[in-house]
Each structure stands twice: as C-alpha cells, then as structure tokens.
Length: 173
Image 1 (tube, rainbow, N blue to C red):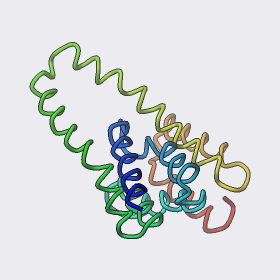
Image 2: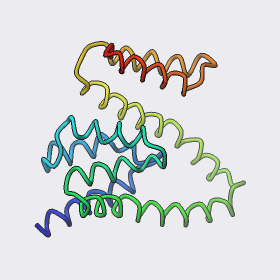
Image 3: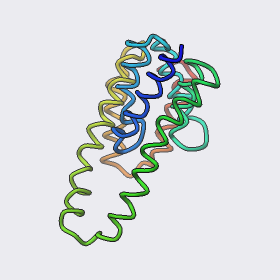
C-alpha cells in the first residue's frame, strides 16, 4: 500500500509542475492516472468531483481534494492536495519574486505572452475531456456555443452558468 500512496503523491507532484494556468489544465492527465491507470475512480466519479468542487465556493483547486477523497478517503485527500500544492506554490513564489524584479526585461515579457496560448490549449483539452465523457448528445455543441457566446458577446459568464443550471435542473442537458 505504501507504494500506491507514494505513486499517487508522485503523480500529483508532477501534475503540480505541469499545471500552467491552474490545476484544472492537467485534468485530462489526472483522468488518465486516476481512472485508466490506477483505477481509483470511475469516469462518473471523476466528472462529479470536478463538478462538485467547481460549484462550491472557494478555490478551484478543491477538485483535487474531492478526487483524492473519493479515491482513498481523508488520506487520499491529504496526499493529492499536498502533492499538487507543494511544488507549484514554492515555484510560483520564487519565480514571481524573480520575475517582478525583472518585469521590464524583454525575455520576461515574451515568456508571459507565450504562455497565454499554452494555457488556452490546456483549458480546451480539459473542456473536451469533460464534454465527450458526459452521457447524452449535444454537449460538445453546447460547450462550443457557450465558449463563443462568452468570447463574442457581453453576456456575463455567470448568466451562462445560471442558464446551464436551469437547463440541467429541467433535465434538458
């Protein structure tokens, strides 16, 4: 059992370092490890963990705690949350201090500008994973339509979330 805990902790240490743009950007890889490789969660549990945590008030990282709890109880929650938080928090603190002191350097500005497309791509991959695993039809179309509405109109994102909640409560999606 110690090897499983160590492996789980090790995976989340790596996820932490890869999670440019937030932990949600490595959700597809978390799915591969937790569902496909280790068999600790089902597809439904994985999707529910993200949905529950995102609907709850608080930081977005809560989904990692919920997944860890569903996979292995309180100990699983502690292992996954510590693994995902420790490296990225330490690295972010060090890099932000260094970058702030050199914020006018061309290389620092170019790095920041180059990270934006990477983060967008990771978020699209996460949206795709969560959309195609949802039972029913039309979820991909609904996801694309929502993204286009947010991008091209002034309609607030919270309005779309409220509309989605009503449609879900009615059983239409």
